[in-house]
Image 1 (cartoon, rainbow, N blue to C red):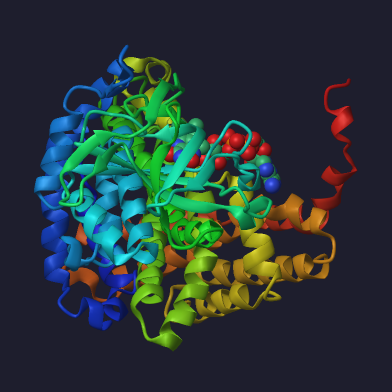
Image 2 (cartoon, protein in one colour):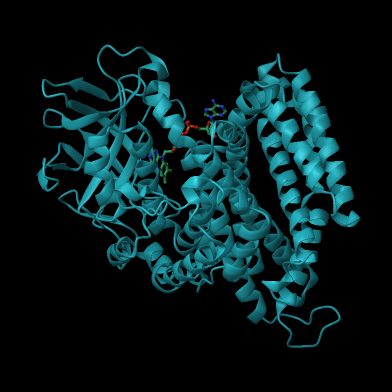
Length: 589
Ligand SMILES: Cc1cc2nc3c(=O)[nH]c(=O)nc-3n(C[C@H](O)[C@H](O)[C@H](O)COP(=O)(O)OP(=O)(O)OC[C@H]3O[C@@H](n4cnc5c(N)ncnc54)[C@H](O)[C@@H]3O)c2cc1C
C-alpha cells in the first residue's frame, strides 16, 4: 500500500508536452524554471509518500466521527499531516505572494496536487476545497476580506468549504432556498440547511471558512438571484484573532461508499437567529463568482481522477509482480501473473491512459495559467482552449478513473474484493469523482451546448487543426490512426452541428461526445510523447523510460483510440433511438 510518486513521468510531461516554455514567458512566472519545478516535485513526493500515503488505508477503516457535541474527529494523523503541509507551504502554492502564497503556475501545482490526491483522496479533499476558496476569494473578494481570510488559509491554520447543495438543490442551483438578510452593520444573517458539505466540520484547523450560496429577500428567482457569503465557523475579530462561535452547527455526517476519512456534513445555519455572513462581490452576482471558480474546481476534480487511478494502478502492479498463479504462456513456472498476457494488457493499458491523462491535465493547467496571466490576446485564446478542455478533463478523467480502479481490482482476483489489500478502497473512493462538482452529464451539457454548438464548432475545429499539425514528425504507426481519428471527430462535429436545432438530440449524445474528445486528446498526448521520446529527450531520461514511453504511446493508439470510432458511430447513427424510449416504459417488461 505504498505510493511512489511518478516523478519521471511528471517531469517528462512538464518538459515536452505541457507548454511549460510558454508559461514561463509570462511575466508572472519569469522566476520559474525546470530546475525549480524538479526540486518542488521531489520534495512534495517525499511528503506525499512518507507522511500522507500511510494514512490512507487506516483512515478508511476508522472514518471520520461526529461527536455528541457536534464536533467531528478526523482519522488519526490527519490533523498532524495538515499542519505539516501548512508549515511546509504546501497548502496553496498557486496563491498570490501578497497573501503568503508562492504564486506557482498551475502547470506545476497540478503535478504537486496529483501527489497529494494519490496519497490520500479523503485527506487531500480538504486542500482541494481550501484551494478552491482561496482562488474564489482571490478573484472576487474585497481587499479587506482577502487580508483577513487568505493568509490563515494559505498557512494551513484555517480551511475552506463550498456550500452549494441543499436537499432540493443539487445540480439545479436555481432551487437554492438559504436566506441572507442584510443588517445595519453591512453583514448578513444567514439561515438554511446545506447538505453534503465536504470538511464542513472537522478538527484539523483552528477555523473553518464556509463560502455559502444564499438569496436575499428581494432577489430575483432562479440563478440570477444567488449571492455568495463568507461565513466563518468562528467569527474573526478586527485584529484577526478568533472571537465567538458563529450560528452554524454540524447536524450529522454522512455514512458513505468511499472517501470515508473525509467528513461530509449537513450544516444548519441560523438556529439561533442567523449566522453572521459577509457578502462576497455584489448581491445577485453569485453565479458569476461560482462560474469563475468552476473551471478551477472541475480541473481539480479531474485531477483527482488521475490521482486515484494512479494509486490503484500502482497497487495492482505491485500485486501482479508478486502473485504466482499458473504458468504464464511461454514463461517458466513461478513467474508472477504480470506475465499472463491478459494481466499485462490490463496493466499496460492503464499505464498508457494514465500517461495520456497526466499530460492532458498539464496542458490544461498551462492553458489556465495563460488565461489568468497572459496579455489580452493570449488570455482570450487560452481561455477558449481551457474552457473546452475543462469539461473533458473533469468528465473523461473521472469516468475512466472508476473503470481503471475497477480493472485494478480485477488484477487482484478475489483479493481485490477483500478490503485488506486496499484495492477495493480505491474503487470505492473513485466513485464520487464523476458525481461531485457537476456530474458527467453536466460536464457533457457544458461541452456540447456551450463549448461546441454555441460557437458553431470553432473551438473544437481549432483543437482538431492543432492535433493534425502536431502529427508532423510522428511515426506513421501513430500518426495515421490519429489522422483517421481527427477525421472521424470532424464528421461527428458536423453531425452535431447539423442537429443543433434539436437540443434533446444534442443532449443525448453529450457524454459520448465528451468521451470521444477525451480519447482523441489522449491520443494527441501520446503521439506527441512518442515523438519527444524519439527525438532527443534522452539526456534527461533513461533509455528504459523512453522505450517504455514509446511502447505506452503505441498501446494507447492501438488499445484506446479505436473506442473513439464506436463513439462516433453511436453519435452519428444512434442518437435518436434512445429518444424514442419513453421513461414510462423503463419499469415495464
Ligand atoms: C461525498 C460528497 C461530497 C460532496 N461535497 C460537496 C461540497 O463540498 N459542497 C457542495 O455544495 N456539494 C457537495 N456535494 C454535492 C454534489 O456536488 C452533488 O451531489 C452533485 O452536484 C449532484 O447533485 P445531486 O446529488 O442533487 O444529484 P441530482 O442533481 O439529483 O442528479 C441525479 C442524476 O440526474 C442527472 N441530472 C440532473 N440534472 C441533469 C441535467 N440538467 N441534465 C442531465 N442530467 C441531469 C445527474 O447527472 C445525475 O445522474 C457532495 C456530494 C457528495 C456525495
